[in-house]
Amino acid sequence: MVQAFYPYMMRYRGLKQKSDERELADWMFQDHDFPKTSSDYDEISRYLEWNIPFNRAIVTFDELWSDYLEQREK
Figure 1 (cartoon, rainbow, N blue to C red):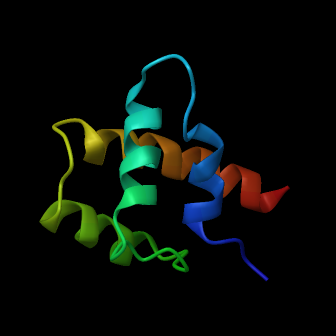
Figure 2 (cartoon, rainbow, N blue to C red):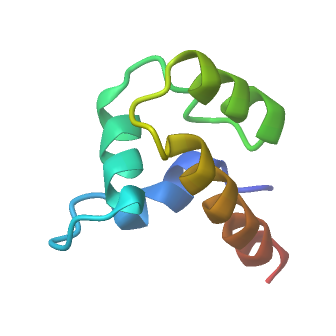
C-alpha cells in the first residue's frame, strides 16, 4: 500500500528551524480540508493552487514531491 503524502510531510512539522518545508507541513496539519489520504500529485497540487498558504508553497511542494517519490520506491 502506498503511503499518502500527508504522513510523509509530518516529518517536517514543528521543526525548530524555520523553513518552507516546516511552514507547509504546519499548514497542512492545521487545514482540516487538506486531502490527507491522497498520494495523487494532481489532487494535492490543485488543492494547493486553490488554497495557497504562502508564496513558495507550490515550489516547496514540487521539491518535496520528488523526495516523496524516491522514499516510496525504497
